[in-house]
Image 1 (cartoon, each protein chain N blue to C red):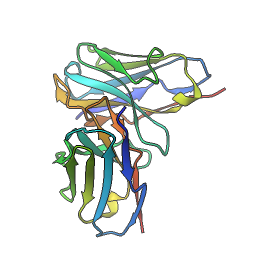
Image 2 (cartoon, chains in turn brown, green):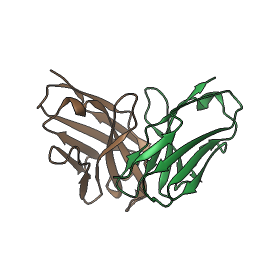
Image 3 (cartoon, each protein chain N blue to C red):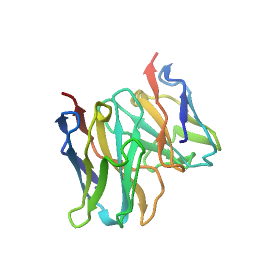
Image 4 (cartoon, rainbow over the protein chains, first blue to last red):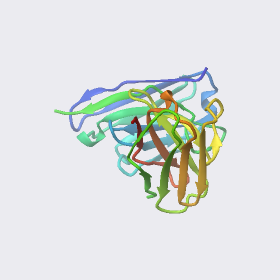
Length: 121
Length: 106
């Protein structure tokens, strides 16, 4: 059974940093593109970042230069390092899997349960 | 950026009703569109991909259609489990979601 489990969220002051983790199980993690998606309650999800199996990355303009996505295929873990946080980054953060092994389909077939990040003084 | 606009924002319907949700893209996205269902406190769940392909395990009362810039999600006979928020997502120019359509009990 495919499972994704996020951790590392919480309350952080403006300008601070957090590192989110997403542990994957039930599939060959290294074969799949992985994404981070965030969602403010009551709004639609927003794509944040993605990484392919070889480590090639892409970012939304709103987080470029502040967030870094990475993965440790030996530990089946996806990361999101978030620096320079502001109130606008407050959201539920989800890791999500692209369903195509070895390439990309573009949509998401599995999501984690989400982890809340709150940026406030 | 490709903008995705859903209508209506809220839809009131009864069990057994046929329900249609529309999603418009600000530019041509061919068939590269997915539909998700989200319930409170849960992650989105994939229903439809490539505009009209039903994901395995999703009830056949859900269907999708469209191409280019206009798409629809139809629920042929609304069931109690279907009261939720629905999102469209394009995945040809990065990844963009619509703002959502909440389906509520009439």
